[in-house]
Length: 617
Image (cartoon, rainbow, N blue to C red; front, side, top):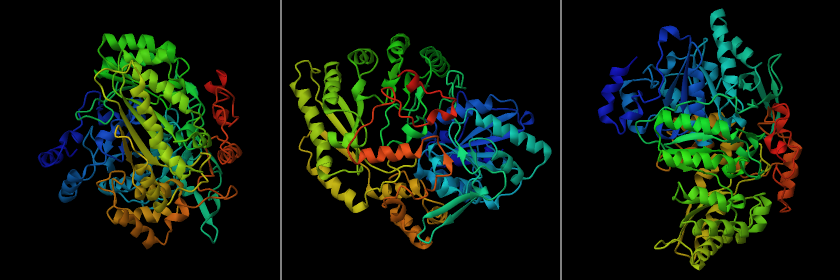
């Protein structure tokens, strides 16, 4: 324990509470009674990581296991890192203050590709070798999970094990395997080999990638007998019976999402063709309203939070929403707790839902039309019409709201300049609607905020073969977007084209990017998702030094027959289904949502046929 050394640094840094631990709900165990130690690392700042529901679930789960102690670790801010490097203090876990090298597992959650250089920086701060091949002994097993591991190849050389899919069931399995191997005194390689036999665990060191002369992939094959040719993700079939924490660690400094969170369901019925989460979290599995109510009450009582958020990809698609809300709203009203329902759909935002929400919430509402014209909304299978948007906004305005945030994307497949100009035009019509209503909020001005992100093709979506727009095209479209906005009540924000390029490369790249990421880290790249730190020139220098063309991965349309870097990973979605959805997109044809008609995507093959979208069809 290096607590005294750490304490000496705190007067010289901003927000020292990021590094002290000791929060309400944190778990401290007797090391003499622990035989497996796990450092759960979030490769971003404390405030970001403490908002992540997956980290809260697995932290509670592991600490509920006898003999297992899970601690937290976050990427230190620049001021703290400077002090740590100057004083030669290795990266440490919050609960014990022990350095990461003392842990059996170093676990990373990979929520976004732009965190990859932070993973390397944290390993460097921990005084550990960056590459898997350079780490020896049955200790410091580096494991990574999260949505980005559906294509882990760009960082495959740095991670020992990737956990595909959901972690509630597979985590106790590999921890128990490790405990056995530790007792037997087996080698690191033997543990990794046995781990590769567990469904959902991908050990990249046991696979060789062969390339064609044009740098496309020829094959990905196991290099050791008994290793599966294809690795299937793990899925929890029954969410009512799955582990969910009774309490959260309550941070000392305000987190980005500083509230209790109740998970409602996993997956999404909609099939939006750009949305990776909507495909990789299939099949649809819902919790019962009774379980959600019980878990919500426990969390609020145990944490003291004054806000409760219902968490899902599309909360208003929850089939028991009308049953759940009345009791939940009554409970929240009585305890002065604000109820938040993010991820609402335009096409099923009912009048009764608006009335219920109005009792506990008066902040802005957020909807995601995604595209400015109906043709493009059809192409991406958004299945939302302008009439539905206007009907929803009318209900919201008459219910007392005057602020609406609309999410859009630029650079979508088949997009034209007319589609881009349609974004502010649609927002202006919403403003016009507000002004026309006699029952609009009194003494309030309308405010429509457009958030426009750049489309990035992601693995395991119908658009995984598409090209992202190059920088020049995106900059030209931004000019169209801004010049088309004639309404002062409409404000527009957007991301820059440079980080879009890097994210697109990392999302679709192969192992040829491992050297690039390491070189970018050596050049000083870190916190790449933060505007203040992102340095495009350093990334481009890394590509040049490694002889890799970023446009090959980001801006090239891929033939359907080409081997993709992630083809040896099985997320249970049929490839021919994704191809058929891609072809329909180019004809601006829609597909019904999963409750209207089962798409036979095959996602339920991992849950014994369980798919709540189909069962409630």
